[in-house]
Amino acid sequence: MALFRSNLRAVFFNKMLLLVKVKLSRQRKTLSWFRNLMTHHCQEEIKSRLKSGNACYHSVQNLLSSSLLSKNLKIKIYRTIILPFVLCGCVTWSLTLREERRLRVFENRVLSRIFGPKRDEVTGEWRKLHSEELMFCTPHPILCG
Image (tube, rainbow, N blue to C red; front, side, top):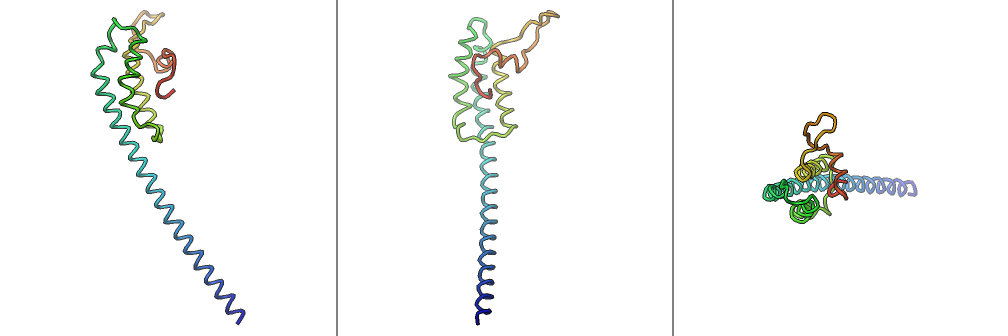
């Protein structure tokens, strides 16, 4: 009778262990599905925010390339008009390297419009500023510093 009880306990314990494993695997699958859904949602959110930022950027593009405004005023225009469209809700974003790069490209395009071309000291030709030079030109890193 004691052997039967211990076997019964072992079978019961194995079934419970199997149920726990099945439940954990379901939870992992659910968590993985939820993580993929949130990543996809984040990517779509960033795409729509960058579209809004591009539309805003094109509406003030003439101001940013104007020689009548100072560079500091142009940076203020960028920070107060364009950036709120791009960064609305960014606290909840979990960025991948691809999305970080997209944001950096957007920022570099705006900053290159603000700072304009630079004359090369050796050849005397005009050239675009590189991303490192653009980051060096701004007093504080704005997006992906």
